[in-house]
Image (cartoon, rainbow, N blue to C red):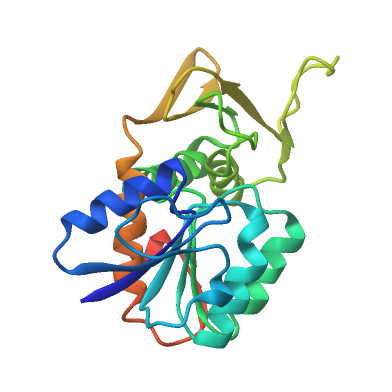
Length: 251
């Protein structure tokens, strides 16, 4: 049985992960990590990873970038694989994750949806064919509580397009201050925040007299939690240090 730790267990995503784990006979929740305390939970909730003394096969983290240092130290000292589903990491923190992955297995993705990761492959194909003569714009929409903008997924999509379009690119995040015609190198990224939108990402390829759009809509948070759980099951079988991502699951 997979012994799971949920980091950020008191948050919205942490509770969805808990529900999926409780419904899966192959999974046992060994503990939760959350700085906000425990409340009434069917498993121990610890304010710091350093307080955990049991056995675990993987950690799923849907918490905050502020929790990263403790999680990386826990992974290093206890040799437990991490599944990092948190977004909003700084460039320095991304470098920390890469350094830790030289010692322990770490799975990281800004979006745990299998559908989004198939979409990334479609974007690469479209950019490779259309990128030289079509303008690329990305519009992402999320609920009012989301802190980081643009979303980590929007940046993943932009990176996928940039890697395949065949020319140098420049990301443009706001156009209200731009007073010149659109440059061929630009990939526009726009963020919308409001209501309870779980997550929408739309990629627009705009050419001469022709527009192609690729869109993904998340209808519930369960798809992200399920993807993270599948990632944790995969990581529980991994012993080699390294940085793993959703491409391992969508082949």
